[in-house]
Image 1 (cartoon, rainbow, N blue to C red):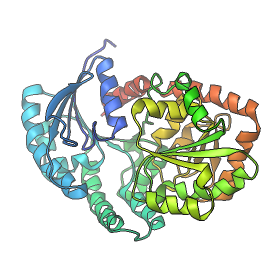
Image 2 (image 1 turned 180 degrees about the horizontal axis):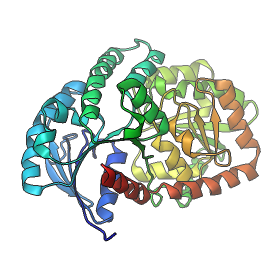
Image 3 (image 1 turned 90 degrees about the vertical axis):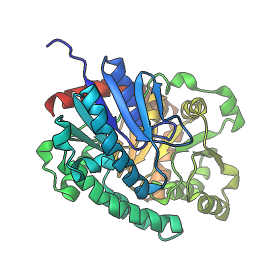
Image 4 (image 1 turned 90 degrees about the horizontal axis):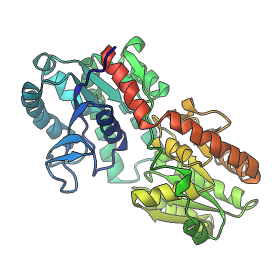
Length: 390
């Protein structure tokens, strides 16, 4: 069948400069494949209202509120904009990320657009709400976020009801969509997230970074500092690890639980074995991955876990909890899957990898090979196949 370039309208509330690697990477690689991609997103960090990023034609609409009030204003403004844009551009498909397209159904936009609508689910609002039970009411933010997920559930439901095709980032997420939203399994396609295998590579290893931490066995965590991310269990595992191994934990990221986690480190006497480095640049991040001896994703709930693929692409052995969707793409050759919320199981897995250098090298090589199958260009091709079926 001859190639036919598509004109694609993508809706994503989150988009660079606000962290949202998946929609951005997908849009960029769809352009690489020869398609024309327009994205409507929110405005963050005083970014321009219109610009072209790596061939992606980006339009940002301003919203004046955080969280779900922001989603509502984004939806209302985008509803008018997308119809006007569609009339001039005549898109072949509208691709909605999560609840960002709730207004399509709510405002009866589907008949106006007369184009297939695909919704990608990056998780379930109800699973997010369940995972917040691990956090407790430790802050006003937590209470606000619970309200956000309760409201977003209905946004998701409206989006899914308007979709011609639904994609999920893992089978775990697909099952949640069936259970939580009542969408028939036959209408859902699993499309795993991808990774930039040029940016995340073993070649990014930094001798200076290794030297900074005294050549110790480096354990890396990257992500939001939230209780549902399970970082507290990784920290609690450290005393069991350092009794047998000269290890150091590097924590990359910021979040509402940072102060609690710092106190936890101090209370269990692990100050000399943990470094919180905060937010780092993209180049620094790839160096941290490639320079570490093991990467740990201990989340209590994670629809997929892009960080897992980033670690594998960097040639870094991976440990992840059984509640992380990325477990569906790995084998024991490249990763260890542990019980979520179990610091003893986690410590055992870290020590198993630390004690066996040959195993680490084998995991690194096989992990990199696996990650190459999930390069974003391959994921973009898969998405195009789903478009054709929408």
